[in-house]
Length: 270
Length: 309
Image 1 (tube, rainbow over the protein chains, first blue to last red):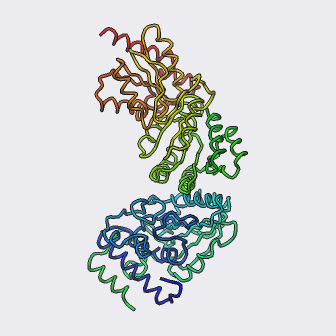
Image 2: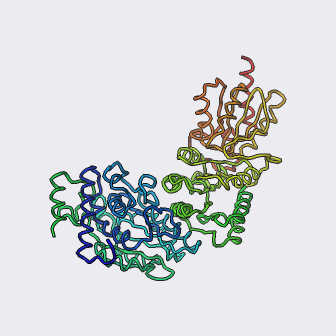
């Protein structure tokens, strides 16, 4: 993907990555395909249009930091890291990769996650260091909506607001489904926007599948000087595959051969 | 001990501008000097220990050396997953300073006791555990931690500093300190209960030849020194202010059982129980037979029995 890509090209690009994710889940039988399809457009926007990072230069100074705090959506990250050139295709299709984002097991992962509610506090630490070092580095933390049940998320949110950490950007993949049901039934997050705003964050709600617009907006963070930014991305769990969309069960299931075929066909339609 | 430790941290911070200090809203009259000297490297994160550990990890991943400070249960078991996943997995230069080893917070009750912390922290890969016995050991530890990689859990007592060492010739993380050598028995103690152990040796010296070892580092254990003592003396005693499960006693027993030394081994520790009596620390130790007087009596019985064989 490059700057001159039009919307048709972008859609095709995201579909190719979705196909990789589906094949990966079909091959490995792993859970969380719905979570990956939900946030993959956000990852594409970040990795192909926003983050200042370079494959092969993992420790580059002043690079942007990305933390996949919803570590269970790691198949989407693998697919994107492979497309971007951090991971080799062999490694991706080898499939013996951790089911949660794990540093040292694959190149391009800054921090291990998997237990929810860890990414934002770590992101705060990175952001404090960046401010102290007068670095241009920005820190992006992608969380799930269910993850916002964790108290540690709000401990970090309070600290970042209080300390005006404008190096820090939280992104919430708000697909409105968590492990056992709809977020509004399990533990309602609403009014989510007001919650973050009251903790001292600048909030923006967006369509989490509009790659072009996300790139345009995310590139320009912070949303406001001297404030941490949070993006509430409205998304659809299982996005792109009709029978997976907005279904709790695809938090767990992986497609069999027949369903994979159907899904790939849908994603190949013009 | 707290003041000596923080003074040493300040000395480190003067040399190295990457040294940070975080507290979860504790450390009144202890941390002010650091805060005054290095306001940009000091953060009171509020009463939020999980967040503090995550922040420490993020700072350390950015190349900082991070000291975190609070009462022991709050910086160990309260935020154990952050310590394990964020700090230990990434093997970061985070120094967890926990205050109130054992029953230091006597009157505050069981929520503030640190009687299982060593057991829990010992089980974490990459974690080093040091429990200094007096201000000299604490200072030496901070100094020698400068180039030590990976996390360190620093277990400190609270209350009046008891000086045990007149001077400390050498201090190395992972090494025990021989205070005296003996042929009948060796007493190994970790932390400020070393003071009681020293008193025990005084009481016994006319009857038996008893050696004394301070073992500040509980992980990695000084296996070489322990085996030497086990092979040269008839009996080995450990004394600690921690539950009998998972602390110094367990660590030493592991080594002895793996090496088949045949030495007589008896640990003295707190019971596997919640302590509900409210009294001062000295009184509590006495009630659990960990005062110098009680320990002397218990050790004497063993040594007299062994002597008759």
